[in-house]
Amino acid sequence: MDRTWKIPGKTLDEARLRAAGSGVAANYAGVSVEVEREDPEFITFFFSVPTQAEDGEETSEVEITIYNMGRDGLVLSLEADAADNNAAWEDACQLTEDLADALEGAPLDV
Image 1 (tube, rainbow, N blue to C red):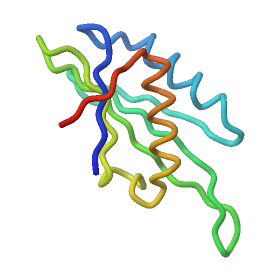
Image 2: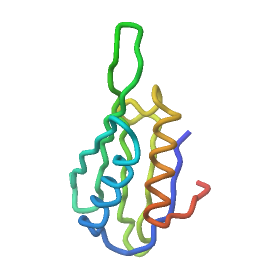
Image 3: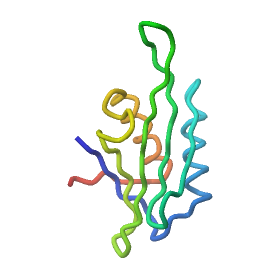
Image 4: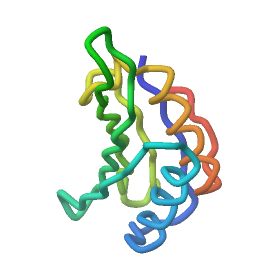
């Protein structure tokens, strides 16, 4: 099940979004983030999250995207089928909620 939030603003302020992503990652031991502007209409956060595996420690990649929807503004989206989101769903949800809070987002029912 995908989850979405409405983010205040009408443009993708890359510096502000990068700062928010870095701030969220800094709150968790071993978590890092890369932010990529893959398209003029969206920015994607790739959080590297440490996980415990039977054969030692590994990482999962959590992918969160903010889309510029034109007149409808900005939407933050957590998609279950992106990266390792489904396998790391609890971590993905927590990071997305933290990012939404940092950006003053409001949950959307879609």
